[in-house]
Image 1 (cartoon, rainbow, N blue to C red):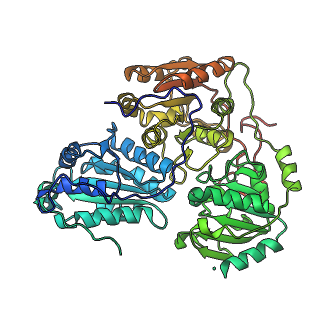
Image 2 (image 1 turned 60 degrees about the horizontal axis):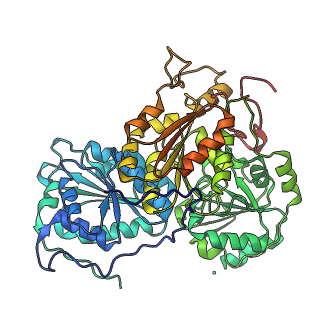
Image 3 (image 1 turned 135 degrees about the horizontal axis):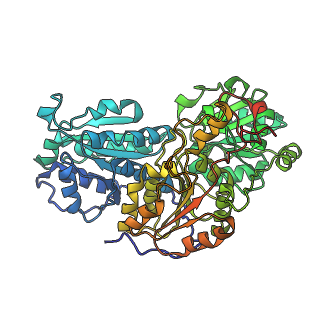
Length: 584
């Protein structure tokens, strides 16, 4: 049964969902209060009480009872991925696009370990996620039983918390705690490992009972004293986009976003400097380098933003506001720190800005790209997609050059419109994340801007897209290479190629593999474009086609993501032109 009817509206709006957790207090159980039921049914009922409507679960021997219990639920629907990694990335896409916790389920052993990349990704990007894994029966734990893995130990450092359920009576409490932990403070993933015999055991659940500013004055003073302030905002501001916009408009302070913060402030707003960091705009990095006050909201000063840490914002007094006290001073010591939710902390600040210098930089160093005759510049493809959708679709990406072009050339209007693996950089993220976003946002058009290398890592999820009839459009920027690796080979390895070519070495004139065949195998309409003049019509057709669509856009592998600040570099090291093979 399809999840919903496909949408044929080209400019369908990506709905902004208020991130709230809505436990269902009026849930009517299928069982009498004292009636015994299987542990697996207790798990599913606990999920229902947390307001869960969708899960992404792949079955196996140690989790089959949970899947049987899901068939008895009238509330929760499973969207079946074709790989556990696809399931956890889909749960992330669900959470990233809605603000609600995503839920994924896997069996023991290899099923559980296939979740590891997604859990690490959710941990570093602060995504609320609850993962449930099957485990071998309690009596077999520690015996190297078939498909046994100590997943609690494996995931201890990449989850906020994890549980091994050893008593069936603990299930309601543990599930409730897991959702609280995943969504409170700095969000993140929580794992619950449930032995098979617990799932099979009968019990009547025991339900948990209902759980019964001087810093700002200092910041305001710093703002009034400053001449060149900059707002540096990250993923911690995705829940406070309206407050951020209001503050920026009241004060006139320029705003630059991290990769994870894109969408928290409208990219096309005159106050926006767009993205900063390694692949950020020259004018954003210039502003931070020259600033005398850096207002850092919901950020972690990661190395792809700061480069050489001691040189980052070296002239500025730094104010750091973050809900996670562990982030304050971890990488860059602030002059003023506030352990607080950014949402409430920004409302009473006021200022007027410094702009002449920055406008001069914007004019001098716009985001540009080269052309290659009839070939399609990848940046142009992203620009055209923005134009034809009026910036209203949800965008997911894999990891690589295409990710940075999507960050640079699509102008994001609202939080949770941009879904990418930022801190962990997990290839294969884009396609399954699009699935989660489409499930969480019925009626919205979701476009996965992907690269051929990243796309191939979870290509099997095309089957899920077709079966669910999700209106996901795949815009594949296909250069037959690991483009970001090629770029680094060109610039730092004298263009020596070392396993970065993904085509068929014996026949380089043909596109390999033929991506259209993957789409065809899953009964998804598809087309390939090689000439720039044909691209507009092709994207229009993609957007106007009901249901899923796959567009294979062949691009030159010689193109680089620019500007770039090399790893460990400073603003003075920024590269704005050239390809590393040619002197300009």
